[in-house]
Amino acid sequence: MRSPEAGKTGAGKRYGCLDSLRGAALCSMILYHALWDLVYIFNVNINWYSEGPGYVWQQSICWTFIFLSGFCQPLGSRQIRRGLVVFGAGMLIWLVTALFMPEQTIRFGVLTLIGSSMVITALLKRAGLKINTRAGFICSVALFLLTRNVNTGSLGFESLNIAVLPDRLYRNDFTAWLGFPGEGFSSADYFSLVPWFFLFSSGYFLCVAMKERGLLRKLPDISLPPLNFMGKHSLGIYMIHQPLIYFILTLYFAF
Image 1 (cartoon, rainbow, N blue to C red):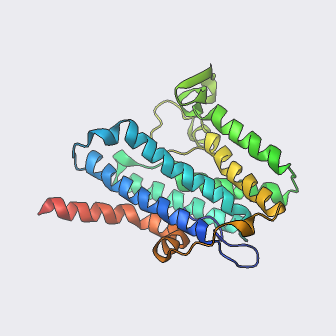
Image 2: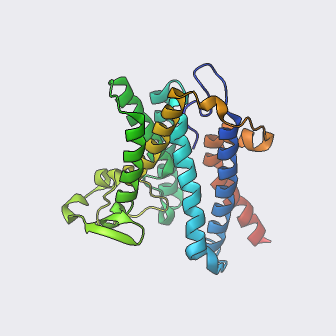
């Protein structure tokens, strides 16, 4: 889930702390997915994983990746091109899972969401749209909290539902990409534009605000080689980690 030129400034400087954070989140994700395979494919009973603790863990991973991707967006070049690469990787995962794991097909997964968000923000910037960074950050956070439950038919956050949305919004794959999945839609990893684009944009506006105020240079200069390496190559690692985990676990349970 690597952002375009993630962790770089326009001058080519990398922020090691961003790569390290991404690498740490990637380690957490790999462990989470290993347990997911154990529970849902190999039928290993891990009670806490399917309950509240597992859900909080899963949310911490996706929140970190999406927010960091938004934060790194203003730091890179060729943003549209890199966004299309990430989006294409998400579509490839959709195709492969549909062919080989139809019961666990990933439609509009996290890579599709991040790639879409990267392209949208880059196009809006190219169009000359200017938004006050403080207002943009506050509105993005507020909209994310307000729309967190749109996938299930309402405005609100988690157990707090504020208003029920009309059924006519929930129709087809296009509305599912936006955040309004129609009846019968399913995905093993679903991240729609609404609400998740607002989490991405909150990271984006925070980074721009810090750049404007010269605060990026105050980010800690952390050098943790293994985590930095994983952070720099997170897209490739993301693409191969699940097949590799599945292969290893299949060999383990076969003997």
